[in-house]
Image (cartoon, rainbow, N blue to C red; front, side, top):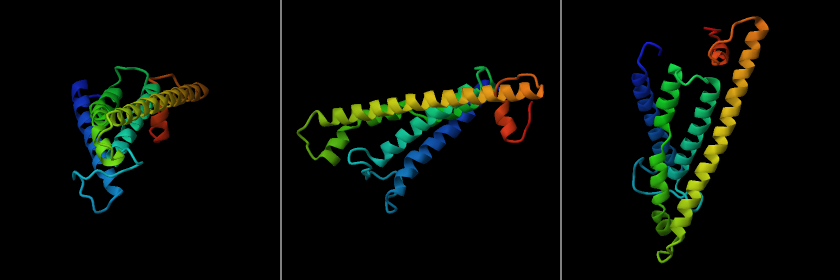
Length: 184
């Protein structure tokens, strides 16, 4: 990874992340109804007001916030090529603010499908706002937890290196050690 320029790392990571998001948000809802063809217009009702596709998007965005914050905690140096690939690239392509915005604005569909009250003008606004606030709150909580965990793992790795007399490095050695790769 260190031989490729950062723009190539971001490009390749973004492509991988976008494919992962697409797979989860298209194929995960299909698990709720085996007769549903992925990408079909039929929306599945997940919790009475949110489609399984929107629930999958919520999962993608919250999981992405958690993993990105964990990565930042483990690798504090922003110029590290692994952060360009995994953070900006993979997780940037994996999470989707534009899909979140479309889901919030698209709450008009919820009024017709689930509330069965075509005359109510506040129902879709409330559903969309609740979905957006829920996504933001869960994402912030996941990011805080991920950052804390990443920093704690980074500190643990520094303490382990100090105990065995190794010089401190970039803060991600604990990941390499866990995979059996040792230090640099």
